[in-house]
Image (cartoon, rainbow over all chains, first blue to last red; front, side, top):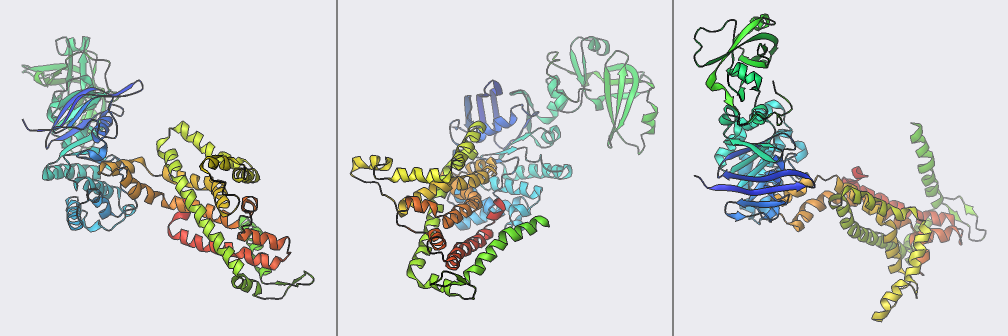
Length: 354
Length: 266
């Protein structure tokens, strides 16, 4: 077991009647890329601000390594933050921004300059040291914010939805770059996002937040393939849920089960060998072209509607379109079904409950 | 275009008339204005010691009032912009604006009462064996600082409110204590707003003569010279020449302010 960078014990933050963070226990390992994923208002940003010291917890403790920092102000904690709006000082040059933390700590001039230039090189902004923030693009400002935090070599770097304001292409590039930078510098990253793809792409582990609590904490693969609840299954990717009557009819057991759309086969007729398979006949209701994949919505004879997803290996979807209103048979491996601990109907996220 | 024309006639026209008048002279016997071009008024302004003294005194008081107002306004504006709840913020804005609803004369006379020989300041000073400083430069500075304070608070408040709070958090996050954040982030970011406010406090002081008359004792500022020459002496050309001094000083001040980018804050 590696050393712990951050331990949260019984951490709570209440605003009047709202429990933004509710009795949270969490350990983040040294050098980990840790993501906190959840819808807005789920408490993930509040946890980040509690770790940074911008908020004072209602109850509980925050340990940074061995140090209890619960009551320490932000400037006395060995963490740095990349803000959602970057919070670049507009009256300073890029270099002055990056040097700010070192200047505060009274690091000598030449040492300061050297480290700031290194940090700018890490984010590939060497050529922009003399620029003013208003002369930079959104992506460049984001890098300045990153360099300004990294230059202090904090124990933990906190990132509050840093890619939210960038366009999709740039966001994808930065995801990969952030991961690379994290591996290079070896600092623990705590990353807050509401974008499930972002969390899955970059993280070693992801905590899914819902109403101030952690719904599930797991590696990306486990989170996607073994969601612990309908909420997680719905928030991380698209899913098909069978419960109650439908579960008995389709799966042949009582309980709640989840199957991912890409795990389902769609054929005109049932296969001959059915060992270890679930088989469900139905009618195609809708065919949706999504570029790299095509989604097909099938109304099962047993009642529920199932979304099936397939990669577009061909350049035409005519074949798929022809199946509209046709009878089909869906099959999937029984061991791909994920049984949920309890039949939760209440905690479904708003969207993507296919 | 018509609005600009209106401004040209009503505003610049009046100023032009003033400047032209200042280049005329007055017949000492008849008191009649003689429309002969001369620089005599401006020469007097620089040659006669008392006018030179009054000019520098006026600029000095204007600068002092500006500094006092800036120092007083900053903590109030910072509290209003970044600490107070939205409700308290609204109440404070009203509280700052409220003195502006009262008549200028009432406020000036209120300070006359404060500084009078048996006024509140005298009561407070008496146990320490002191007196009220009485009417003069000190009372004038205090009264003018009081009168123009809202004109400094409001721009500084507006300027600070536009600074995102995340900048303060970022400064703290990077290890800076409150003092460092104040000096390196808050003050530099608020500086243009201070300059904007100072344009009001400075120019209003440069032109004032009523408060000086009420609490200034025998002290004179440029405004009084203008007033006395118009009224008692009826020397309109010389009054006009004196009146151009604050205008020139303010033009210089505005040119300097422009370079700080403060005029975009108005």
